[in-house]
Image (cartoon, rainbow, N blue to C red; front, side, top):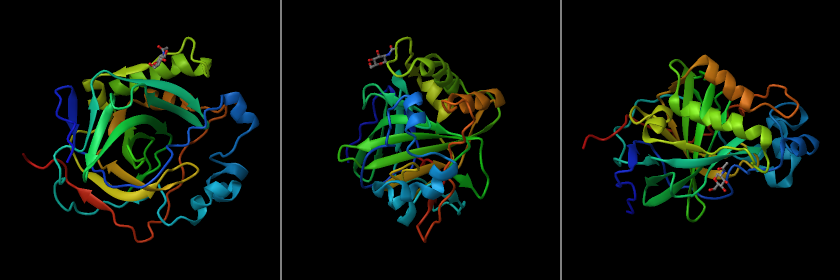
Length: 287
Ligand SMILES: *[C@@H]1O[C@H](CO)[C@@H](O)[C@H](O)[C@H]1NC(C)=O
């Protein structure tokens, strides 16, 4: 198995991942906020909301017909044991990400894919290609909704996707999130074009505040949580939330404001499990 995570600049995080199939990442509709307003393809509420995504575009049919959609309610099952591999996802020191306004949110793209982080699972190596936030959380844990959820999107060379999900709860301020917010505040008003924008550089300590290095992870096969809702995405959801201050969480919400200034929740409702297997691990295997 290709293990690319043993450089001293990489930090190990026990995260579950797996073989995935498919496709285009979080269909970054890179239109400006203004253009998005005029030509809003999908939304989180109203006639273009999640209940209608599958009928808005023939390419999004699976949003409605798919049987392996995300997010889901993660029902904590007793862990089957420790993670089968010691290192599953790691994020790099000095990872640089560029904020971009996308339809219904902001995404942070790794400026040098492969240089931000990797994930390894079942022989696949994935690169961390972008991350983004949802308000409120998309996954719920035993029915509990969290204020926000961070998604770290990884892609393998063949396009297979692995998304690591981390729930955020109110608590101590999060230093990594603070850097993300600073870059967002500096960049988003001037997007697109980026003059005056600011990239975010995350250190190992910043990543530690954002992504649990220990605790449990639950894995299942799901989909993109935005149109086109492509299935075949491997999900690894942390059962240990990270904290952010109430003020930070409020600012995350503000950063996702629609062009019109109305508050937009950016969480797709949970989808039926349809008999899918959810596997929870207790954390790192003792080495
Ligand atoms: C962010 O990084 C990208 C890619 O390296 C670069 O093109 C862009 O100019 C950077 N933005 C700023 C504001 O430095």
